Image 1 (cartoon, rainbow, N blue to C red):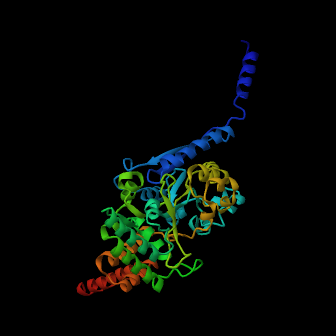
Image 2 (tube, rainbow, N blue to C red; image 1 turned 45 degrees about the horizontal axis):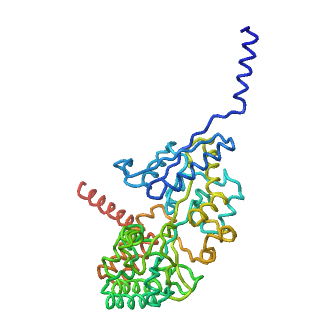
Image 3 (cartoon, rainbow, N blue to C red; image 1 turned 120 degrees about the vertical axis):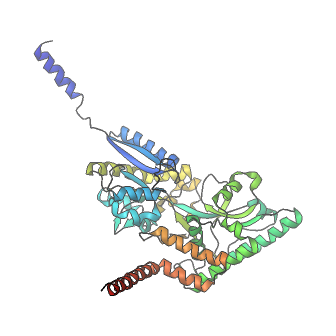
Length: 438
């Protein structure tokens, strides 16, 4: 080959690379507890196919955090995220995180409004996302899904005794007592009337926070103050339920108990069980009743998706393409229709396609409540809130003393008092040290 021919060959070969871009590799961090192995994994695959089709030059892989690959020093997913972000690590680009930690992770996440079109947020702003995705006036996340705490019921038992789904807590107590007695007399059978899944975990806090919410006077009434008569009535009613149609052991039973009843037909000896809404659970459900008919409550959970603020701007832009795709109206519509997932886009429940396969009317009228997670250390507050009420339910503490302490915890005044006490201690210690060493 002549030199001229070689140069022509090199030129033509170089043309093959024109238009090609180097693929940007992104890593998304999720965990086994939030279902990341399934739901988010499939979304990543869908995005990668979409990115290849559109020639975006982006590829996402999922790092699934399990109990086996957690370090000894870090015992849970949220602590793993916080540890990584505090070190300004660039190891992970996209973060799936529990929405209750929006304030904990917010300082380390990108303001999505700098990378996504304004129109994208119009879908979410009318709903609860504006309460759970914003930190310091910045949209640091978008909701992947909304988990809902619902009340599953045994339709067969209700039908056998010609009872309807209760609309108030008093009706639930009355219905439960009647069916329990009839089952014991007629069938010599002991049933679990009401299991709130009030164990010593975040689930317990969710149930308690929702229960108090159901005692507001009207649908549009705000969350009752913890020093209010509504809060007192709520705790007294909860204790009444425990004592009259349940027990300490039943109340404390964990999620495993619910699964045995939902998926093992030999164990379905329950009447009412609290649990997160899952499309795979085939029992019918309602929302927690209220003190007054027409008032109810449904506590929300779920995961947000955000972008690590310490990665390069190139990776931030690429990650934003992923976030835009998985939180788009079309993707969320698909999740609702095909996976029975509740989306944070209110507009979807006006969509005819969605409403053909989803109970839009019920979900449009749902009375949602979020946990008070607009704090840096939500876990400590939740733990204190839960254990204080447990002292009333199980250890005989007075309701007035309980709610007084809960009020302190929920306003974080107990933290301030602790710091104040510590400060006084050091002042006294330092004074005595100076005095005795003069």
